[in-house]
Each structure stands twice: as C-alpha cells, then as structure tokens.
Length: 266
Image 1 (tube, one colour):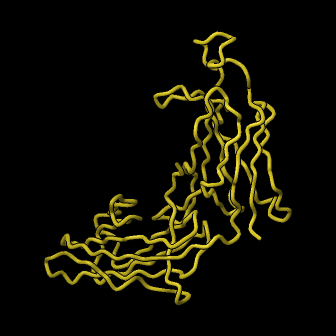
Image 2 (cartoon, one colour):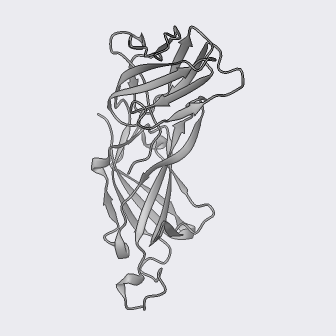
Image 3 (cartoon, one colour):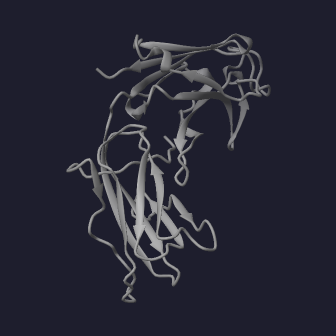
C-alpha cells in the first residue's frame, strides 16, 4: 500500500478561492464559523497553504481527508489556541479531485466544520513504472539459515520500501516519510516489481530513499542494505533534461544495483 499523508486545495473558478458555504456548527446555536482560502490550481507535490480564518479564537484544529472517518491532524498548540487565524499546509501525490475537511473548536467547545476541494494535475511529475533489483549482497546465498544450502527456501523473501519527502501539516517544512512498500517476492522471485498501476508520481526535484529487506514474517525483516545507513538516496533532478527511460541506483560497497523504469511527462 502506498502510505501517504499528502494533500492540496481548490475550486477551478479563480486563482484564489474560498471554501464552500457549508459551515456546520454544533446544535447549540453557536455562531462560531471559519473560512478557508488557498491556491485554486495545483500540481503533484506542490505545497499549498490553506489559510483558516475564524470569527472567534480557535482552540483546536482537526483535519481529515475522508470526512473524519480517520483524522490526519488533531492539535491544540498552546493553552491560548491558534488565535482567530492560522495556516495549514498540504500537498497531494496523485491526480484528481481531492477534498479535505477542517474542524475548528472554540474556547467554549463549540465546533464548526468546513470542507475544501481541489483538482490536482500531473504537472512535471515523473512516474515510476517498475523496480528491478539487479544485485545485492549475498544474492543467491543463504538468508534463512534453517534451510539447507540446496533448499530454495534459504533465499531471501525480498521486499523494498520507498520514502518520500512530505510537507508538515502545521509547518511548511519537508521530512521523509514512508511512501510505498512493495509486495514480497518469495525466494527472490524474478526480482522485478511492476508498479505501473500504483501511480507512483513525484516531483523530480525531490529525491527518494530506498531500502530493502528479507521478510521473516511477523513484521520482522533482515536488513539487506547492511546498515546503518538503512536507506540509500535516489535523485532525479539531474535527469530532468535528458528524461531517460531508466535510472540506476548503484552502491558498490554493498553490491547493490537497482533499476527504475520511468515515464516522464510530455
């Protein structure tokens, strides 16, 4: 599954738009309301500042991507709250119409809900279509010592993980977060993962961190990267001009070679 905390905002009618008109306060006749404004059009991985303005002090802010079936943010930053205005930051790593939901709670515990929708386009994002592991330390060797040297089950049950920079919701700064975990190739398999249907788009100005392990079950894996470091970085920026069909991550000291098949925008 792709793991992501990424988002953005919208209305395709103007360069700067406000949220819909459906503030939903409590049933206690509260007059507490908020308005949301942000950039109208966005591309993959673009940081969007969503300005939140209330008619009263905002003590707590909550954010969700699925109308609060799950909660992305639930925070009171100080005993004094956020004041009457603040900003949250979002970005999305896939295309299409997206909606975020923001709930604000005032000093009296009254809450109001506002939604904000955007249409995200690809822009200059590159897509990863496949990942092929060409070599790694002790390839074709024994990773599961309980099996004999002639037993195919001694080979590594391989999976890889990608980390991607994500914007912090309350701070306009980026940090690496888990983005995609592959399926397991038992006993090494064919060492090629077709991920074309996973929609792995990213801004080529970003880099990725790659890690790989031998799955031993129960959430335990041996580190094939022989870390620390437990990840190695893949960069795309220097390839923006040439737009190659493949790029290769090669780390000689751990005999690692991994090839990424790419699709660039026209």
